[in-house]
Length: 331
Image (cartoon, rainbow, N blue to C red; front, top):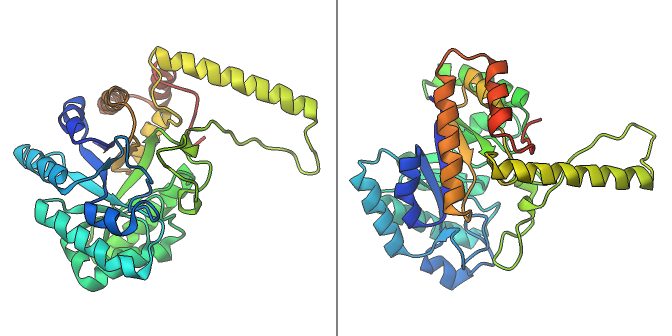
């Protein structure tokens, strides 16, 4: 069965997320030693945030979390996000030190987006001691780069939000060929719920900060205009009105069972299982705990449904009738 990976912004949510059905948790961590030297000028993990539940901000909290994970016999591991798009050369030694501190506490999985940081960790020999998850913010390009990432220690690829289902399939097929030669198993993770991105994550330079609503929560859509034609102002206005009506309807669906805040791929779960996706990302650092718990429970229920002999049409029909919010990731 595919595993549910849920974003967490507070240590208090760990047990509740486990009870809801999460198989893995990912968190942001910004220790004091980073805050003193760099503050939020260079985000350590793609979130320029201090004042709400997006980060774990102290070593003592991480030690508490580590003790809870240990109590549950590491059945639901925690992955640390270090997915800033880039860092300055002087910051790499400090990041490596932070990784070492986390390993000492009992955290062995890290999400990384900066290729130079991946290379640095490999050269330091740290990459051999950790599970390296290449972030969707990295923006995988082709099978040659993926082969190099595997050489540097990657054992999970997180597909970015703009990749198509067909491209996922092709990348995974090329990975199977490489794994046959290296005997190394690579896992694949896809975004499933919440926070679509206007950009490609690896090319997004917007802020995710305390003062403003993140741009990934603003509604948008992509529409096709035929070559050589332009929509009139009247058509554009009408189109916008219709879209707002659709969004309002989506809001009503959310009240009565729809899930996901601003992005959903539940109807693609059947295909993902057939393709070999191993992990499903529910974005949620900073989300309300009750919303995340609801999302996790729904995904767990649908994964159990997939274990029955159900056809793709039957599965999609169930999703659209009960959980669809009309804001699709991959369609």
